[in-house]
Image (tube, rainbow, N blue to C red):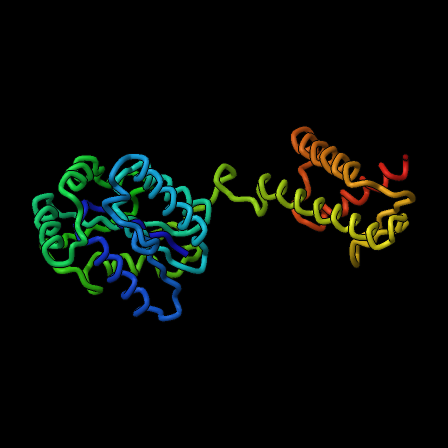
Length: 302
């Protein structure tokens, strides 16, 4: 349904804004699915996450993967993190576009001096604060959102130091209206991102296809070995794979090394055909049928 990216300097009231937005959305419609994704959801320590560039990059990867898995047309995902790098906000915008959902950015605009003061107060009261060197580094690298950028638009701005943030704040109310308004052919003020060929996710990726083929062929190979062991070393003639599948015709005993060789050859042929011909099977049933046909041809010709 929507992806909401909350950004701002460290200790600028982002988590408060996320909580107020979620509360306001549920007040509007209690049946809405609203989820906040942040570092706390993964029990991550903020100082460890931003201690160096590899750690920060890993954090962004964890959050991005979780957002990608959670995005749907039936729920609202609120990203409560620094989101301070415009390139990262662009990546999140691409995820929203690939999912065909709405997208907006909420910026908590607070002067650095106030953020620094709030960070010190947190250290004294709760201990949940940034180390001074990490805080200064994050402040220095923060890239303000710009509504002229498509990945920063629409942009709703909050000023937590001037006004207390609650669910009735003007920007929160405006964001709720934008996220929940029904869209029809006459709607012009609400933009639902549309996936392009480059960003649209297919139901199965090539990696998924290869995984399904590998798993299906291994399962059939094990079934053949089991059937031969039950026939006391002889040939079972027909090995049943299951209802709806053709049987495997075996006129002689087939050893495990030969089965492994046939399986490796089949996997190699399937991978080659995906490059120059039709794509490999995308589900387990199709993969099983193809492998059974291949085995019947190979074993029948020997």
